[in-house]
Image 1 (cartoon, rainbow over the protein chains, first blue to last red):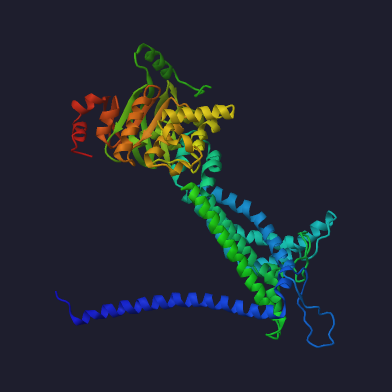
Image 2 (image 1 turned 90 degrees about the vertical axis):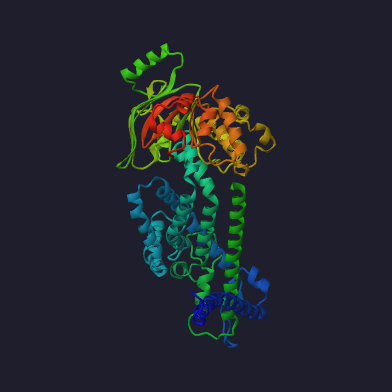
Length: 312
Length: 274
C-alpha cells in the first residue's frame, strides 16, 4: 500500500482538533485574566476615591454615600475589617463543626464500614453535597436561627434572630461532605502494606489508624481542609439569608455579623450608579476575597509539599 | 500471659511428644484449609516447623505459600471473606482457638513483607513503634536501648547511627527492608515470617539480607516465602514445596533440591514448571 495524496485529510483533521482544544483552553485562561484585570482596575478606581489604608484598617463599614448634598446619615465609611472578621468568625465556626465530623466520617467509611454500608452511606453524603446552597440558606434562616434563639432564651442567653452561629452551623453541615469525601480518598490512597506492617507488629485497628494511616494521609487531609476553608470563605447564599446585613465587629457567635460576600451582594443588587464609591467597593472586596483564597491555597500547597518531603 | 484459654488434649499430647524430640517443633499446622469466598486456596496442609531454623516455602505463583504464611500470624483475619479451617499451633497452643489475643500473637510472630514498608516516621520511631504499642520500654533510656539493639541485630546501626531522626522512607530499598526487620525484632518475637523479603531488592542488598537471615536463626525461628530457588537453597535448612494449594513435599532443603520424591517437586526445582 502506498501513500495517496488523499491521506493528507487526516493531517488536516488532526490540526483542526488540536486547534479546537487550544482555543478551549485559551478561553478559560483569558476569562481568568479578564476577571482578575477587571477586579484590579475597578479596585484601583475605588482606591482613587477611598484611601487604601481606610479600607484595609478601618473598623467601620457603612457604605451609604450621599446622593444629594442635603442628605443625612450617610457617612460613607469603607473599613473592611468588620466584614473580614465576620467572614472569619462564620468560617471558623463552620470548620470547627465540619472538621471532626467530616474526618471521623471519612475514617469510618474508609477503615471500618463494611462494603454494603459504604455503598449506602457514600451516595447519601454526596446528596448532602448536592443540596443547593439556597436551600441551606433558608434552612439556616427559618429553622436553625429561630431554634437557636428559642434555645438561647430558655437558658437566659440573648441570641439575635440572625446569628453567626446559625450561619456557621449550617455552613459546617454544608462542607462536611467536602471534607469527608476528600479525606476518604486520601485515606484510601494510603497503601495497604502500611497497615499490614502495623498489624503485623501487633497494633490494633485504632492504633494503626492513629499512628500510621492518619500521619501518612495528613498532607491530603490538610489540603482538603484548606479547600473547605476557602469554600466557606467564599460561600454567599447561607450568609446572605442567615448572617445579617449590618456590620458588627464582634467575636460573639450569638450576634449578627455580616460577611464580605453578603456586602458584595447588597452593594450590587438594586438600582445603582455604577461609578460611585459604593458600587466600586464591591470590586475592592472581591479583590480582597480573591487574594485571601489565593494566599490560602498557596499556604496549603506549601504545607502539603513540606509534609510530602518528610514522608516520601 | 497465656496465649490460648483453651488447649485441647491432642495439643497437649503433642507438647509431651515434642519433649522427646531433639529439635522441638515451634509451629505445627494440621489439616489447614483456607477459603477466599468460595475459592479454596489451601487444601489439607500439614506442616511442622522446627525452631531456630530457616524454613523456606517455595512453589509457583498462586500456589498458596503466602496464604499459608499469613495464616501463621492470622494476617488473613483482615482479609474480607477469608476463612481458615484446621489447627495451627505455636508451642502447642492453637492460635485459632477462641479467645486468642491476636495482638499478643503478632507480638510473638513478627512479619516482614515483600515490599519494604517503613512507616512515614523517623528511623527511630519506626523501630520504637512496636515496643511503644506493647509498652515494652519503661523509660526513654530503655527505648533507646531497644532501638539500638534492634538496629544492631538487623545490621543497620552503623549506616544510620548519625541520622536516627531522618525519615525511614529516605533510606535505600535494602536499608528499608533491614529497617523493617529491625522493627520486627524490636518486639522480641519468637518467630519471624518473611514474605519474599528480597523480591524488591538488588543482588547486593539481597546478599546482605540473606546473611542477616542466617544470623537471625540463632535466636529466632524463621519462615520465609521465596520465589528464588537459589535463595531457598542458600539460606534455608528446611523446605516445603506448595503446588495448587497443596503441600506437595517437605523435608531438609538439601533433600528437596537433590533427591525430590514427588514428580511435581522434581519438575519445579529443575525449572520445568513455575
